Length: 556
RNA sequence: AGGGGUAUAGCCAAGCGGUAAGGCAGCGGGUUUUGAUCCCGUCAUUCAGAGGUUCAAAUCCUCUUACCCCUGCCA
Image (cartoon, rainbow, N blue to C red; front, side, top):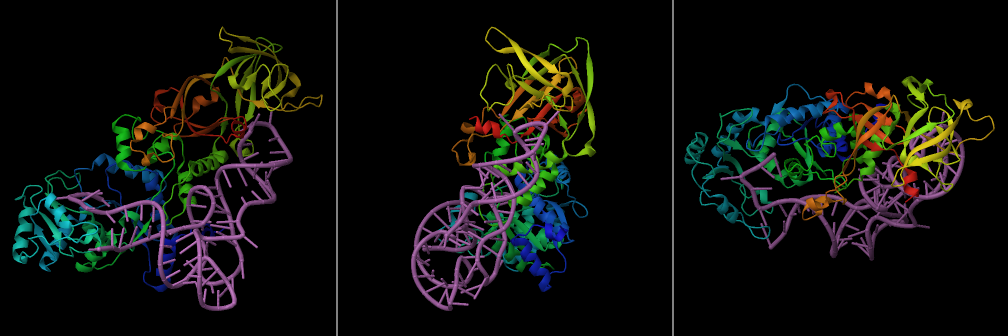
């Protein structure tokens, strides 16, 4: 399949195609404009893939621009984290990083231009009064008493604002548009406010900061953005976006297009709520593997390719949507099934003793790292008389549907011999502690010569050579599909979103595991070494996602 | 005195007047030294509803309904 056939198609790309065909544009320039006030989440990944993906496919450019007009909420740490996440996802921005604050001087000039045209004024209504004057959805607003101040006076007043002669909240610069507009954002929106705050880029140079609606459109114009793509809640704002562009002397006229934001089942996507999960220590941080942040998915073991594929599969439309977790899981399973080397790990070990295996004998079995991809090679797995197997892989008796080890029945040890269980030991509670079996020496790499073939295959590790490991089993953070709809999401947090298994046994080859590198623990799922403690030398594996499990489904 | 948007299967989503793509999920079967993978089959007489135009309508027109967004000196 050619690249062109492989491209996604959506309404925004249709618009771009038409713009290119009509000659409205000869090249495409997009931008990804996060505010540095938190970590990027999977919803941002959708936007990143859209904006950077368009630039790639149309031979255009995509800028990374920090929308940093509100210094009180922003932090330089987020600026760094966001860059890291964008790069990790596999994208690179055109040229230098941009900041809205790069344009503060020009923006100030545009504000002065509006004042000179009689299209902006300094208003001394306080926040409460401003709200009252604005009217409601069903009632027009009324004009501010400061609306007809002369141009000269406004120029002087705005200069005083800029020079720090007014305290915060005393006054603001407003665009003079229409207090009876059906678009609330057109009822003389505030475009500059006073904030005596230190800015992570501009320091203490400014005490007035431009508002989003004034800044974003002009930043787009200044950067030559052709298609300014944002989410649906900005649809009304587009009228103000166009008004500003039309009333100020900028050379370009960018257009805004809106698509629906991503909602994912069983998780939250609003920065405010993610922030409280972090601040209330309900998770271990922004990169907790249960978080829907890009950093969280990375630590969980998701690959950049899987997230890009996810973005492609969910599409881009204007429809409100809630994507099932299964879509994301299918993407990571597809990637990891092809690319993750196999290994064996026993999460709930019970001992298996092979009674007819020589006491001191050990073998180094050669096992394939991938069942069908020869290029992934082989590894050595030690084998001896005493092994560990999974507690749930043994039953004293079972019906025919159970395809694992049962007393008197045979089963294949993955990559090794066929064994038959003979007896078992139990502790005081009746839990099986040791299973005894015999092995068929002539079954390594082949079926028994008597024509029988064991129904099941179970995984195992050598009891003496196995490594101790901690395994963290992650599950959905919430018990309901739409936690955002709850009055209080705290009441629906999944108490079993993290289950830590301290006494797992893993095969020795896993000593070489690297952080974020995925393994398939056979018959269980995909795991990766935790990136936060990888350097400690401790083996802590995070479960990225389980294998599809039709057995669990049918045995329910 | 309200305005802006959106309705195609369980969840996404193509479609743009010529007779409903695809993915995920599901269901049935086959292969398999992972109950995985892989393979095969199946899954909308109908597009929110009702009218209308047309030889022909998910696509055009009218009305109705449902849901989302907008009254921060946040973005």
